[in-house]
Amino acid sequence: MGFGVFIHRSDSIYDDSPAEQYQFPSQYLRRVEACIGDWIIYYEPSKVAETRGYFAIARVQQVIPDPAISGMYLALIEPGSYLDFANPVSFNGPTGPVERGVLNEQGRISGRAQAAVRPISPDDFNRICELGLAESAPLLPRRDGDVRQLDLNETQMPFRFEQQRDRVSLTVSRILRDRVFRRVVLRAYDERCAITGLKLINGMGRAEVAAAHIRPVDANGPDIINNGVALSGTAHWMFDRGLISLADNLEILISRQTNDLDGVRSMINKTGHAIAPQRASDHPHPHFLRWHREHCFKQ
Image (cartoon, rainbow, N blue to C red; front, side, top):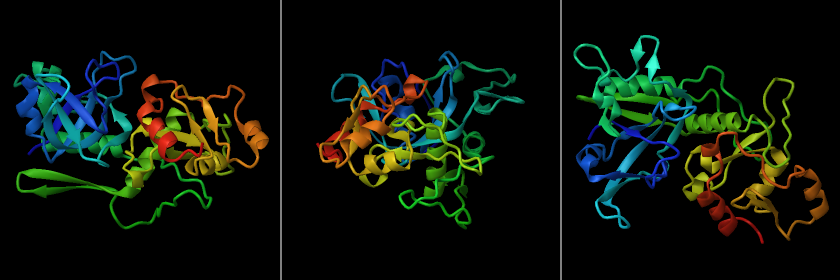
């Protein structure tokens, strides 16, 4: 087993869903198989407009032949392991590439940096994760009864690396996942409620909006931005209880079981559609929206 880097781009021709699966051709089979049971870092190449660089981690559970396409394979991601970085990490740091394994003996970037799948050393993996998961100014949760509170004095380290012979293992706590998920979702939505369109900041400078999972964590919903939406307190409460939902085109759906239909309509922004992140790849994924309509929304 060993750490790896998987190149992924939002406009990829491959059937990728970073929190669930990674499709690849047979030429990379041995490299991907070497990552089974271990962590990989997702990297978005510099050719992508507004590239995020190294943007997430996940753990490879198993590799199977793609049942739909001959000669292709799928790396299946361990449920619940995917985590976006709070701070996407640029390929180049102050002293050169943060992934030093891409340098050749002359200290120049080698062709290895172009490989869609490549191994990465524990030191490089450690360095990139520490940069990506660092929190300079944690965004605290709203203080209302329906938002799960985080214990900011929790003694458990939010993430840690443990040396095991010549390997390094990574442990990521739930407290870090909650913080990072909130940060990336609120940043994508500019701290604005997707349903009401309101951007409210309290007296302590904190956004009065929560990062809601579309498919909940307890229903195997991943901590990926496409499974998140920024919602104010009332909208969050209604969304979790299936009184409102979203169509694939982000039209706001209102349950017929709502006892104050006019009141709910009045709180929705005038477009009748949820406000979406500027970056298209950050939009709610239809896969998760469909789950919410089928398992949560009260028709």
